[in-house]
Each structure stands twice: as structure tokens, then as C-alpha cells.
Image 1 (cartoon, helix red, strand yellow):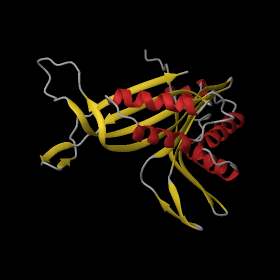
Image 2 (cartoon, rainbow, N blue to C red):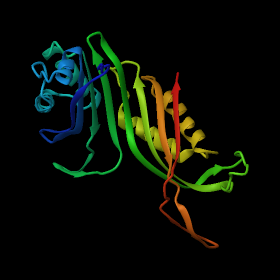
Image 3 (cartoon, rainbow, N blue to C red):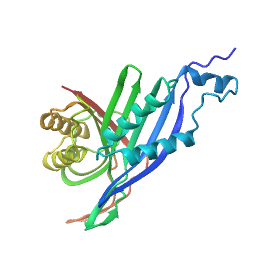
Length: 264
């Protein structure tokens, strides 16, 4: 006989654009709830305790109206704690939000950006915080010189030549854990340190690159207890080479993937 051993449900891609005067708080939120009370909705078709995901969407919008802060971490905490307070049969909730980036042009005019963005994730249950994580996702960084990759294993499967000074194009997500949710490291500042370190160092590999970024982040932000990376090597393929210049084209899959987690 089949037995339900894990289940959860919720609402994703809830857009929130809060305007207060000339300030804009913009994000896309996701809410996932769990609890034994929901099991019969799967096994018996009993919806008597199911909070409709449309109601969750409306709840998030109401929290957007009430939220007076400007950080994603504060917003997901408000949603999670208020959901648990409102519905006694919800045992736990996962709330995440990703920034919808805008930049101010002048006065009350803003321009939408379609590039990297901040994220915040929070898992709460009746005992408190299960896990919390912040991050900056979608960084696409190209370095024209100052990167190398040599000295790796060479055997019958190796066709890659060694490179002692190459361009480097990396797609990177940076995540971190704040030791205290009441004093989170500013997401934009962490991003700026990551980008600045990428600019400054000469790396022997992407592995060394993300390690050095992580070391600098932990050094600069005492509020962060751990930092993690997901990076893809998206270095362009060489199409044509001349004496003074080279022409590249977009790389085809597969892509190299590098991950790292550092703790204090």
C-alpha cells in the first residue's frame, strides 16, 4: 500500500511592486507550506484544511502593503511568521524572494534591469528558523586577461590545451548565511566585493577564483557565517585568431561547473 512520506504545496512567481512615495520595493515571491493536516487532501481528496494557493498570493500582497522595510530578508521573515500565526495547522513554511531589479534614472523615473539580482530564502517551523540564506544570482563576469588553467591531469582523454593567460567568462551565483537575521549583510555590498575581487586577482582556475572571493567576503562581512558559490565556465570558443586580436563565438554546452562552500 502506498504511503505518503513527504508533501508540501504553495504558490510561486508572486510579483510584488510596492510604491511608497518615490521608493519602489520589487520582488517575486514563493511560498511553500507543509504539515500533517494536508495529507488527507492527497489521500482522500479532503480540502477542508487546504489554504488555496490563490489565498497565499493575496496574503503575500497584503504583506507587501504592510511591509515598511527595504530588504528581501525582512520581507520573507514577515510573510513566514505571519503565515504561521494565521494558520495553526501549518507546521512549517518556506518563503523565498528574488529581487526584480530597477535602477533610478532621475527623480521618479526608473529603468528595469534584466541582469543579476538579490535573493533571500527562509524556512520556518513552530520552533523557529530552520534555515536562512541570502544571495546574489546571475552574475555574468568576463575577464579579458589575467586568468590561467594549466598543470591539470593529462591522459588519453585530454584534448584541452594549457592556457597561461586566457579570457575568462563566468556565470556565478553567490549565496551566504547571516549569523544573525537581525543584522544581515547588505546584498549589494556583498555583490560589489565579489565583483571587485574578480577584477583584482589573477587566478590559476575558477576553483581558486571563487575561493579568493569567498575569503574576501568572510573577511569584509563579520555578519556572514558561511558563503557558497555555484559557477559555470562559459568561456567563448575561439573562432579566428590573428597577430593582434582574436574573434570568439558563444560556447556550446556542456559547461564546466564549480561549487564551493566556506565557513568561518
